[in-house]
Image 1 (cartoon, rainbow, N blue to C red):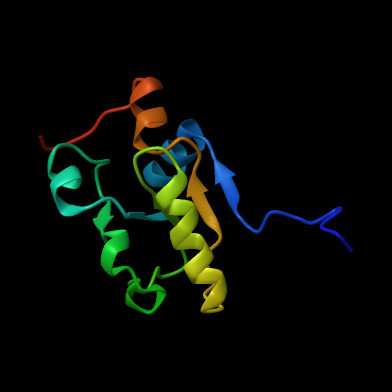
Image 2 (cartoon, rainbow, N blue to C red):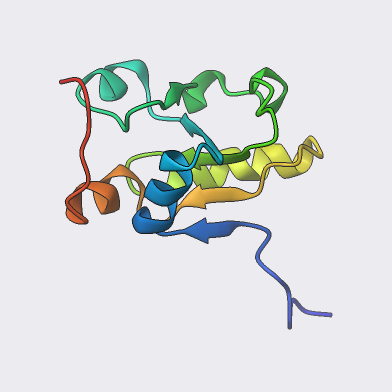
Length: 112
C-alpha cells in the first residue's frame, strides 16, 4: 500500500558485470540510443534498437542469454524496460549509467 516495500522491476548491472557477461557470451546487448548516437561509438556486439521505434516484440531471440538494455546514461533504457514490463516481455536488466559509465570504467567502444 502507498508504494512501501515496492520492488523496482529494473535490475541494474554495472559495467564490469556487463563486460564479463559479454565475454562469456551470456548477454545480448540492446542499445536504445538513436542511430546517430550509436554511430559515434557503441559497445562491441550491441544491437541498435532506438527507443523512438522500440518494441519489445522486435528483440531478437536471446538464445539463452540475458537481454541487457543500454543507453547513454540509464534513463532511456529504463523507459524501454517499462515498455518490456507492459508487454510482459522477460526483459528486466539494464546497464546502470549507460555507455557513459562504461567509458568511465575504461572499457572500449567501437565506431565513431
